[in-house]
Image (tube, rainbow over all chains, first blue to last red; front, side, top):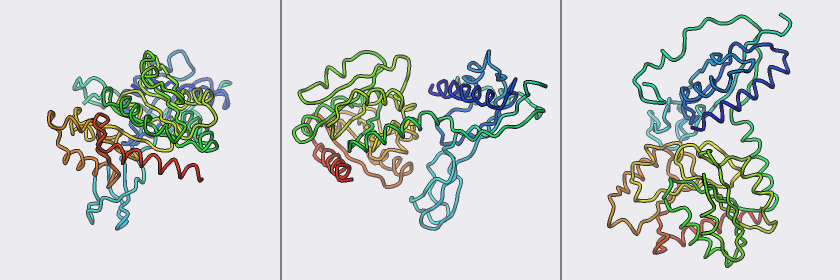
Length: 117
Length: 241
C-alpha cells in the first residue's frame, strides 16, 4: 500500500503550490497515471481523500487520467499499445522494444479559488 | 472490478460525475515520485563519487536474500571492502546474521513501511565508512512496493527462489520488469519442488526482453561463481570510472 505515502506526498506538494499561488481552496487536481506506474488509481484515490481532509484541498478534487502504456519496436519502429508491458511487436514479432509512455505519475494542474474572491 | 477489495463494484461508481469547476487553472507538472527521485539522485552522486558499486537486492520474504548475501560476502570480502544495508519492518536479526570482520552492516527498521526509500537509505549512507567498494542494499521482502522506489543504486537485482513457483514474474510484473539481473535461487531444491523453469524464462522474456538471468544455490554454491563474477566485473568498471 505504497499509494498512501505517495498521496500524502501529493497533498504536501499541493499545499506548497496553493501557498505560492495564493489559493484559498483547491477544487480539482488533474493527475496522469500510466498503466505501468505501479500505482493503483483506486488505492491512490482512497489515500488522497484521507490525506486531503482538513486541508485547503477538496478531498474529492482528484481527477485521474489513466494512460495506456505504449512501446516502440526497436527493430521496425512501430509504436504499439503495451498496457501491461508484456506485448511483443504486432508487426514483426520482435521482443526488443522501448517504452514510449506508461510509467508516468504526474500532477498536471489544479483548479483553485483565489483567497480574495 | 474494484481493485482495492475485489468487491465487484463498478469502477465508474467510485468517481462521482463532475462538472468542470470554475476558477483559475494552475499548471504543476510534478511527479509523485519527485521527492524520492531527488533524494535517489543525491545517493547516486554520493556513491559514484566514492566509486561504490551498489546493488539493490529485491525479492519475496523467504526468497533467500540474506543467505545469498552471507555466502556472497564470504567470497567477496577477501578482495573488496563490503557494506550491507539491510531493511526489515522490525528487528536487527539480519544485521546480526550478516555481521563479520571487515564488513560494514547497517540495519534499517522501516516500522510500518513496506519498502525502503531513498530518504531512509540516504541517512544510512551518512554512517557508511569511506572506503567501501561494494554496497548491497537488501530491500524489505516484498514483490510489490519496493519496485517503484529508486534508491540510487547502480543495479537492481531480483532474487526468485524455485520454492516460490515459476508464476511469480507474471503475477508481480513490476518487480521483474525493471530488474537489471534476475537470480533464480535455491536450485538445490529442484528435485523436491515443482518449478517450471521454462515458463519462468518465457514470462521474464515477455517482461524484460532477453535480459540476464543466473541460476544459483547459496547452499551448494552452484552458479555462485557466475554471480560473483558479475558483481566483480561491475565493481571494477565503477572503480575505473
